[in-house]
Image (cartoon, rainbow, N blue to C red):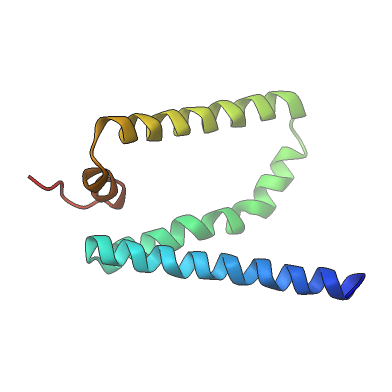
Length: 106
């Protein structure tokens, strides 16, 4: 395969992987918490970026690039540090239950 047909084939497989991820994350949240609401919130959290993309793209076209990149990288760094702190201070089971919104085992 060459050209456009190869690009289409690759794009369809990437889309399949995203769809499998959405489904498995929802099932995992339902399995961890036993809550349909938690599974729905996972789907919502994973779908919001796609829904907000047109508005975010319009807004980013109106802002200077360097300050925007600095702000988004700082936000990402804080999120990673918070997750790292959670990982270093709790056990694996407590960490999974906490991230899923379930009760801590005691």
